Length: 251
Image 1 (cartoon, rainbow, N blue to C red):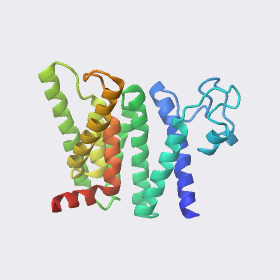
Image 2: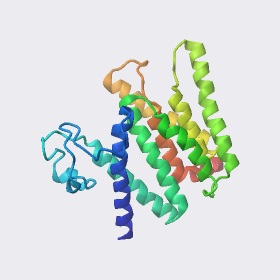
Image 3: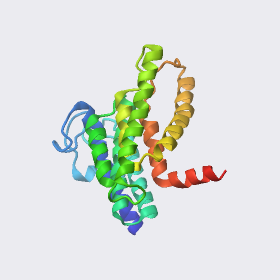
Image 4: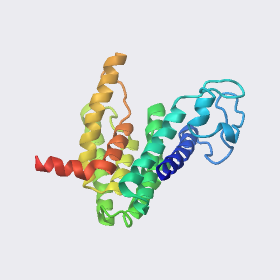
């Protein structure tokens, strides 16, 4: 029952994340008005806004206009619920678990906004940098100094990559949003996490992004957002990073 309760709380959080994903790129308030249908703009009743369950009962359609509701809504709710459950299993009912839930929630918002609009909103990444410094006083795996170095190394490395790429090609390669995102990740996970996250996100990007280019027959110069790969690698590190690094060192 406890595990189910934790999952449900995470799914409810996911419902709020959907609001952020939908409204932040449009510069709309995430607090008002209440949730509404993206087609007819009718307010959604509370009994039609139950995470995952309402979507299944309504078969992915608005009760009023029968307009199709994106499958992304239950996906985000389910993903948030599973991450909440996994954090509880790994870290227990602790402040560290709650802080990492907030961190991963920010990464989920960033991921889906970047997929849709190829932007990473400063309203998430910049406060996230300062929040990470504050969280470092309560996360046992690192100190506040490691958090500061994480910001400098994470953001600084991608900044150098962006400058170098533009100097060599004359084109923008790495967006400023990615730079601020990795700085945020560094503030939450410390500088030791940066090499793992850069390597893992690059590998995931080559596999997923390269496959997408081949399947969709797009050119090699087509833009593929890097934020989702950085976010996925960061979430992997939250759960398995130190263990994977120790395993690699022992090889």
